Amino acid sequence: MAAAEAEVVSPLMVDTDPNTSGTAAASEAAAVAEAARTESQAQVSKAALAAKLMSLSGVFAVHKPKGPTSAELLNRLKEKLLAEAGMPSPEWNKRQKQTLKVGHGGTLDSAAQGVLVVGIGRGTKMLTSMLSGSKRYIAIGELGKATDTLDSTGKVTEEKPYDKITQEDIEGILQKFTGNIMQVPPLYSALKKDGQRLSTLMKKGKVVEARPARPVTVHSISLLKFQPPFFTLDVECGGGFYIRSLVSDIGKELSSCASVLELTRTKQGPFTLAQHALPEDRWTIDDIEQSLERCTSLLPEELTFKKLKSDNSIDQVISCGYITLRETKREDDAVKTL
Image (cartoon, rainbow, N blue to C red; front, side, top):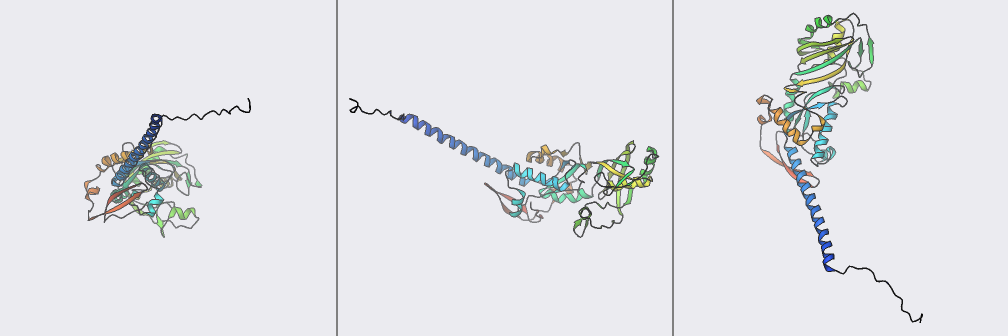
């Protein structure tokens, strides 16, 4: 009887085994706990790195490539270190008056490469000696061409013949540029007028008067190679000396003109490009810590940060998102915020 037939409904497949459901819940809880442990360990690791970063003090050297300015390279270094430590951006640090201090001890032109000495923490107090200390360069000059910047980045302002110039001619005039001499700095330079760099004023089209000649020191200069129109110099000099001005003056002394084609700083103070300058792939907290130990040991004892005046210290709280740590700051430190 069809009307009397009961409708058959398939039951839902439900796992009613309490052991199975309990195991699933336990597995989920274990996964959550493991994720929490992993996150906690990562936070502890980042906190340790941040503490190590904020404790770094001294000077070290990095390899500046062609292209960025010295200031741009320094900002790139700061960003890499802060990112590794899990700390916020430099803009956040500025608002929070963060006290990680980083500076460099002598500008390299954007077109130049080589050793750039960096001070971190209280090591920034040592940088004055780097500015006035000895530096060594390998410069490739080009005869017959003068530019407004005195190097290959500028506009050509003059061209003169150079075919009669010999290697002996160049070697014969180098003595005039050795020792304590007077030098006119380039208009495109880091020197300032009314608080602005001369190079910035020049790029804005402002009229800038040439600076008077000033005393500088050249410890040694030699001609390494001459393949007209190019000549290569090895120069060791004191602070405030401009290789671009030297090459320009050499061109004038030879009754021609000249500009810098390539410039490499191979040494600054005791730090050499080959032995001490860290390439960018080694800009890590651990690598810099090791470099600080090596480089600081090369400095005269009176320059090391261990000799800096230590007054009463104060604690400063540094907030880093999910971590908080304390840094001991000397009251005599000049705070440079990032």
